[in-house]
Structures are given as C-alpha cells and as structure tokens.
Length: 230
Ligand code: C5P
Image (tube, rainbow, N blue to C red; front, top):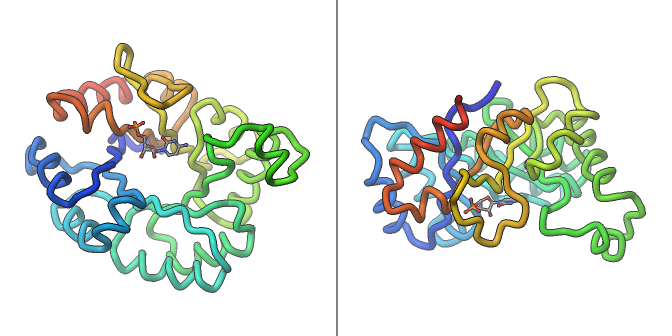
C-alpha cells in the first residue's frame, strides 16, 4: 500500500491556528494530519476529536517510550480517541512494542522510531554505547519492530533502502524531510522530493512547512500530492 495523501504536519501551537489553516481546504477534502507533541500537550484530545469530526485522518505522533504496562494502557486511551496511526520508540524494546500493539489494537497503524534522525553515529556510539554503525542499529530496530507486530517505522528517506533489505514486503516506511524542488529546506539537512520518495518505495510522506507556511496551502498541497502520486 502507498497512502496517496501526503500527511500534513500540523506544527502549530494553538487550536485557532489549526482551524485557520484547515479553512484553506474545501470541506469535502479529507486530509491526513499529523498532530505532534506540541499541539497535543497544549490542547490534548480536543484537537484530535475536532480533526476527526471534520472527517480527516489523524497520525498522532507521540513517540511513547515507557514500561510495557504503561504504554499498553496509554495506547488503549489513544485507540478510544480514534487515531489512525501513532508511534513508539523502538528503543523501548520488543516487549514494550508488543504491549503497545495490544493496547492499541489492530485497527490503527502503529509505527516505531528507530534512531532519531537528529542522532549522529558518533553520538549514538558515545551516548548509547552501541558499537554498531548507525545503519546497522536502524536495521536492527526495524527488525525488532516487525517482530513485535508493528506496521512499520518512521525513518529518513535515505534509510528506506536499508530497511527494505531486512524486512518483509509490506513493512511500512513513513518518511518526513520531504521538499518539492525549489522550496526552502529550512532546518532539514537531507531532503527528498515527493517523486524521489515514491521511487525509493516510501509508503507515507510527511510534509509540514512547504504546505503550512505556503501563501496558498491548498495549491501547495495539491502540487505535492500530484508529484507523490505521479
Ligand atoms: O516542516 P517539515 O516538513 O520539515 O516537517 C516535518 C515534520 O516531520 C515535523 O513535524 C518534524 O518534527 C517531523 N519529523 C522530521 N524528521 C524526523 C521525524 C519527524 O522532520 N526524523
């Protein structure tokens, strides 16, 4: 499967900004929206319910990482909110990820973060005492994620090939860091265009500022969606 809608990262601090942003889209346009920690910690389940009530899909990106029992109970709460996809840290381990799956159930997609893309190999080796290469660690976590019964991983587009080497067909890769040609890359270091992300076999793309900061968000969204589905 390849989700045809680019997931829009709703990186806003307030509920008002979210509503203003969504007003740029026709009511019938069913979007896939990423709600991250900032918005969720500020406005909680209210934002999720609002977005769901408008008919949109929700990727609630909370990256849970705690003891299995706590993660399982929390996932059960998120399932009740009706989220379509959420995340954990693979570093929480096999048992924690399996517990997350149990709590969430099999309806929503459950993805794991392997090594954060902000972590360098040197940092990982020094701070986490992992003596493997960054690529090997990402591959190891992807395999663990798959064994735990999750749907896939959040990864940089540069890692999709590595992940596909060690996981079965159908294991999903969700990639942020997407920029259409000619758009400011901002603080992202390594980016790919929607067409490149498709070519390497990414299943979901997450796009924030190229849409949220565009003078015409609808036009920007449609252009990115067209390139992603070409
Ligand atoms: O604005 P931009 O398109 O860079 O936003 C990308 C979104 O994906 C942000 O919400 C960012 O936090 C998230 N993200 C990322 N890189 C990762 C993981 C998440 O850019 N490795």
